[in-house]
Length: 368
Ligand SMILES: Cc1ncc(COP(=O)(O)O)c(C=O)c1O
Image (cartoon, rainbow, N blue to C red):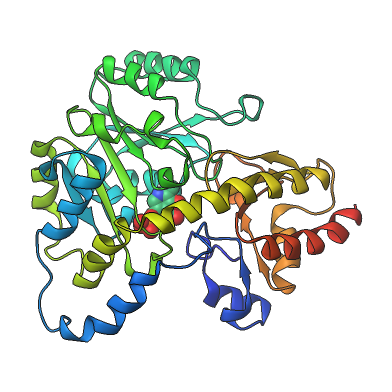
């Protein structure tokens, strides 16, 4: 199984499974910007030998300053971390919720972080009929069931993704504001929000800087294609940030990550070309997948969830296997709770990668 360690993008496991060199795959199993890291990253790497002998800035001041400028929030409302993954874990460790509510499907680390802290996890099942969008009705029903079980306002934690992984669906900010109005605590993982055109209308980042019950987590690894260095940040009111900092391992963000974060945030040209590429390629890929008879859930991010036809002899696992043997990696989305064996997820990449995928998919699907 490609997701042996729980996630996509595991090229060493792919090499073991499919007998192809790790560097030779067309990898659509990890949702990475295919443009690769911005050019500034290579020159920072070349110069890094001069700074590696010193400890990183424990407060990541340069990076926090850049992030504060970038988002127009106070630096005291921002904490940098060793990838969004660290911040997901840190948040739950700080908040110690009695109950954590996650959607099914959603990124597995929300529930895993909660379980590690001894929290009960309640699943909110997203429905295919609603296009896997979270509805106000579902939220109201969950609230009613929490209250019926004696879980009071602010005792539970809602851990949600927007865009959600693997569906790509955005959370409606109005629904989240309703929850906050009920005194609920909400963490929004906006790891893929940078890919969303007009993100300001959907993001809750600015509100998180002033609302005590809201935290927003962001990642720099996907948009800037730098997952190897691990870099993310979160926004919350300064008092919460101070408590999170106190729990965090010292020097959690290494100096190379800090330097790269500062540099990439200023690269407007990279941002523009990424948005142009995605505006062209996601709809194109979605249409082609539909033409092959797949049920496609396009979403707002740089990946597409699709389902194989009912009664097809291939399921997600066997499709992943067949494509893997042909040097193409996709995510078996049936491993996400809430999705059945028909679901797969592919990253949006370049046109030639899509053509390679489609050419491999077509005969496999025609076999019926
Ligand atoms: C929804 C979501 N949030 C967070 C992360 C972790 O991001 P990072 O690389 O910044 O730790 C991932 C990684 O796949 C993800 O899919």
